[in-house]
Image (tube, rainbow, N blue to C red; front, top):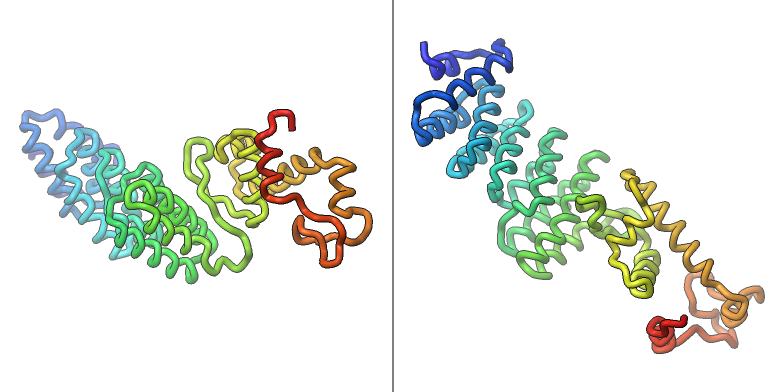
Length: 307
């Protein structure tokens, strides 16, 4: 009995180590490269045993058989449609071989789960493997936003992260229109006044939600200190990975930054201490004799190296 016969007759009771041994034996056989690729592709497309299907897909990735990516993707679509088992190894194989994946498929994988598939879909997005035109990205953003309203908390986090990544990838490949649709979906109906932005942190794209005033303050700080927003996040948040802790650390930093810059003269000009100031911003209350710095004054101050 040949190794191919053994693979086709294998049931779910066969141990994964045995399956790996058979696949390795197939790779080391006297078959030509094209024959081996064809045999592995057929296993991926048709075998009912998920372990054999997945191990064959990974073997195709190992030999960089990009021509098999269409068959792997088609099998992945079928498995997601059935919602049975964990087909994430198929997506892992596609990512390993650098296969381009339609953005609508990745959006569906983010929503469908299971968790391992959602993680792989996010990895594909962050690796820039999503393809599609501006209309495709806009449709995917709309699909994700519609799914977010009915998703559980964990799924909502994945969807928000996917939309954040799409903002960047759509801007890079399809222009601002597609990225704007993703950003609009990301910030629509989020139940608060928080705004989500995509940040490159610790080698990956993350989504951070902060108040608009905090984002404005961060923009001013970055301009004054000649830092990128990504560099500032790295300096402030260090090795933190919890999104809520990161947001809190940024808020505390912004308060401390401007508090350290406060002077007695600045407080006097802002009418602080007179109970005649506007708590929601820098503009004084109606009737105040103090005036906020004009825009050109703030710009001149920023450009002054002695300031």
